[in-house]
Length: 209
Image (tube, rainbow, N blue to C red; front, side, top):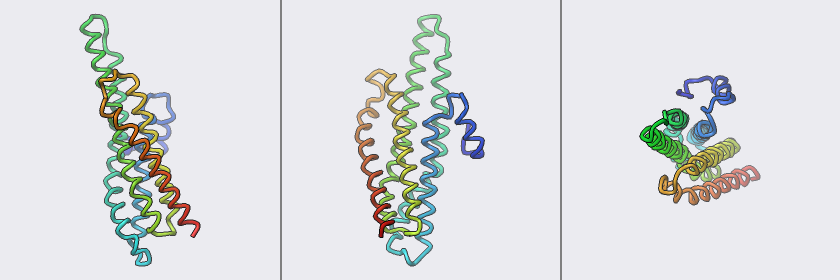
């Protein structure tokens, strides 16, 4: 299902339904798209005014990140739900013979690993956007600094929510699967926390001046 083709009302209804997908991973990817869209708006408002020329380089950089993220977030939302659907399909595979049981086990583990990789990319992309927002909050159009704050909150939620999905999927896999993801998780968690705080501090500082 391509969630980006739905109206907002349709997507919210799908999210509220008892169906396993869309779930938190898909919602995180959609939040990432919203963060990128807001960031792009503030960049546009900055680049469109000589008054904020000091912030043009920051705005141009944010725009270079945000525009492709707006598209990529929709792809990640679809890939996330598709990956989980594959896991659910694997659980329904026959398991009468030893061969069937082994084939089913491999399919479940392979699908679960993919279901961890997709939200990990969502978190990585969200962090990349977060890293660029502090400077936009500091030097961009001051009239839209609160929108940078909302973009930061959404990007932070996207990263942290996606990481929840990475963790829960890795927990069901043997230690020798997803080793790279396990190794990178602590750093991306810490960086997300630090850059989220940095954006909020920059926004509050700008709003108080």
